[in-house]
Image (cartoon, rainbow, N blue to C red; front, side, top):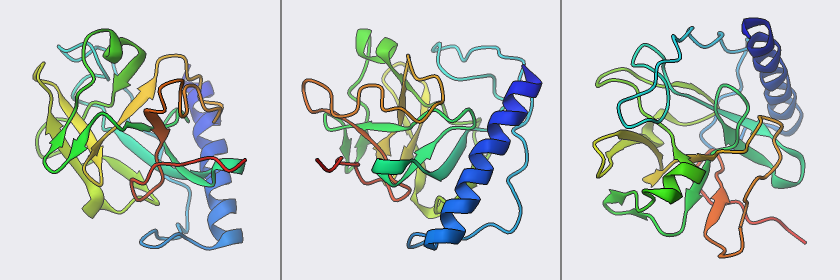
Amino acid sequence: MTDQRTRLLGAVAAGCLLALTACGAPDGAATPADPPPAPAASSGQAHPAGHGTDDDARPVLYAVQSGPLGIVVTDGSGRLMYRSAEDSTDPPVSNCAGSCAATWIPVAAASEGQEPDLLGVDPALVGVVRRDDGMRQLTLAGWPLYRHRDDTGTLETTGQNGADATWFVVTSTGEAVTPQP
C-alpha cells in the first residue's frame, strides 16, 4: 500500500510539475521547485462522522493538469475534488447529508489548528465548515469539498455535471469546471 501511494504521489507530483512548468502557474499558484513530500502515514481510522482519516493525517489538496478539464484539485491519492451547486459559500454550508454523503464523501479537515498539505492551491482560499453531523469539512473559496465514492484516483470524472447538473470538479481557485464540447 505504501509503495502504491508513493508511486501515485510521484506520478501526481510529476504531472503537476510538468503542467505548471510547461503552461505556467495559474493565478495565485506557485510553481514548486521540488515534488511535494509524501503524505503522513495514517492509521486509517475513520473520523466519528465516518469520513476521512484519523486526526494525525493532514488533508491534501494538489492542483494538477487533467487533460480536457485543465488544472483541477485532487487529494493525495489523485481523487478529484468536487463542489455542489446545492451548497452555499456565504456563509459556507454543506447541504449533502445522508445518502448524498454516502456517494459524495465530504473531505474531512484536520484537527483544529492543523493546516492541510497544499500544492498549487492558495492557502487563503482554504477553510473549514462545520457540518450538521459535527464533522469539520474542508472548503475551497467557501465551497465545501467532496470526492466521489467510486473515484479510483485516475483523474476520470466520476459524476462530473451529473444528471441533475449539480456536481462539478473544482479548479485550484474553487471555480466549477465546465467541460467544453
